[in-house]
Amino acid sequence: METILAEPMEESPDKLQTSPPIQVVRVPVKHANLGIRSHAMDMSTMVELTSFSTLGKIQPFLVTITTTAALLVDLHCHLTDKEICGYLGGHWDINSHNLSITTAFPCRYSGKDKSAAAAVEAEIARAMEWKRVTLVGWYHSHPRSHASPSLRDVDSQLDYQIKMKGPSDNGYTPCVGLICSPYNTDGSCYESNFNVFWSLPPPKIGPMNTQDRCF
Image (tube, rainbow, N blue to C red; front, side, top):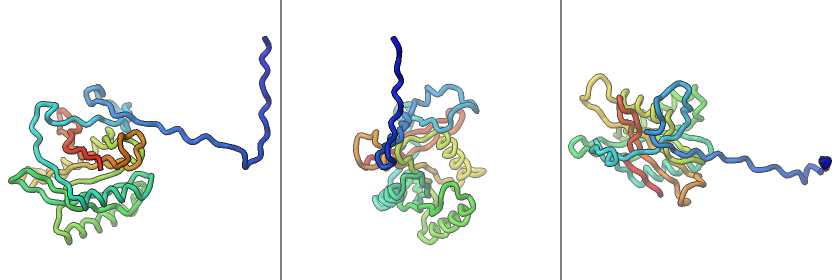
């Protein structure tokens, strides 16, 4: 049988239709299924959060967030479909082991604009001092994917924790990461999804779920 190839039809520009871009949905994987870390591993791989109770461990501290702080983070994340970031201010109560997030400080620059980073961070540091809060974490958005941390996020979070610990445990304040997913079409609700996570220090490196909110 002879196959006849149809000639393409010429259409006017106003009738040409373009297919919408295909959205790649990244599904979080269990940390136990990642295997041995290597340089060839995709650092954008998302990691499924694991609760302390699942591991048979006691959660080292509690995390609370005010409505005002959560609203500001959510609003910042909804301003664009690009990834944004910011810092979290609050207080650490060593007696009750409660980390309270009371306010958010959006970074007013593109994540790729490194030249403005130092000035913005200095401005945020002054704002925290004026509001009499301390740095208790950072946040960023995953605009159209799960609010689960990537391997890169897990490593960055652990680096922040080590830097805030300093040379000794004296005066140590816990540091958490918050991820907001404002436009995740794969979610079960239309509201933003929040995840607050903390990386368990070596030798077992992995994100531990401290709080999971769906607003």
